[in-house]
Image (cartoon, rainbow, N blue to C red):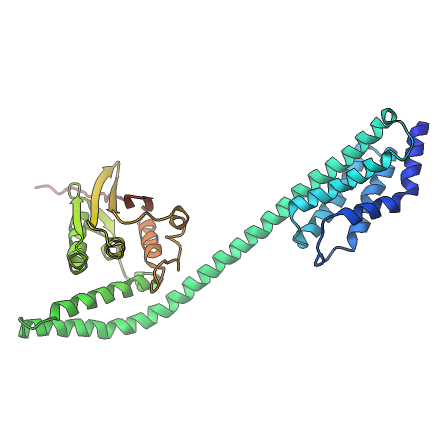
Length: 379
């Protein structure tokens, strides 16, 4: 049985239902572009209907109805791309409108506590279900967009690999011929000027081409991993980059651990060292550092070797450090954005890791690689 006050309250809200909803609708925050603007009135009616009839239902029945309505409304709000804060504000406006109308019933506030509890219960449950579903739906949209972006990147890389695999092989053949003729000219005319410069520039061009070739899986067909000496590889890289080191007046300081044997593709690891050191030279040259220095240190960590390549150039901003290993990311006007991406791909393919730490006085690229299991021979 209902008390007289409860009956009076229900009758009051029934008589003024449309006025309440209209007042709520006039106060809410919305946009002209909202595709569900016309449903706002209907949704308000549905929630108020639950409030007016919840005394006839069990709690679980009320919760089920509110949850269904909340999910439906929240999905409309997601599609309308409304701000979550605006949505919560609009829902609570309904609660405020109901409270403001209670004073017009003539019922003492002390006799309306149960009604207030019922109103709060409905609105709190509605907001809980609506906000939860809204957040899940928004996260799902973000995940789908992220997957689409990742897929697009992968498609671009696949296409790039297919294009460069055929094109650059064609480009490399005449380049190899030119390098061969340079060697013949050196033998016939050892005192001819500029041959060393031409040869060095061709080597640099060959190095750039190799970055693109490493994106193609076809390049790995027929290749086998082999053992190679890390220190010897570093020396080869420094000799290869010597013209650039000399031109940039860069000091090289290296402290390499005892001879370490690695297992993998030596030409690819060489490419990693060339790329990172050449980038350091380029940064130091453009920074006009009065004392440009590159440090190369190695140390043993369990069954791995860590090689740190540091330079005293400018700090890489934190927001850029998150992106430098991503494909097509570059700060250079003529950069491809593939160098460091290729480096990370190579190191991870060798079961290693490549990281970057940057501070105002030093930037360090750390390369971790597993040491090869070398079986000693009997002397």
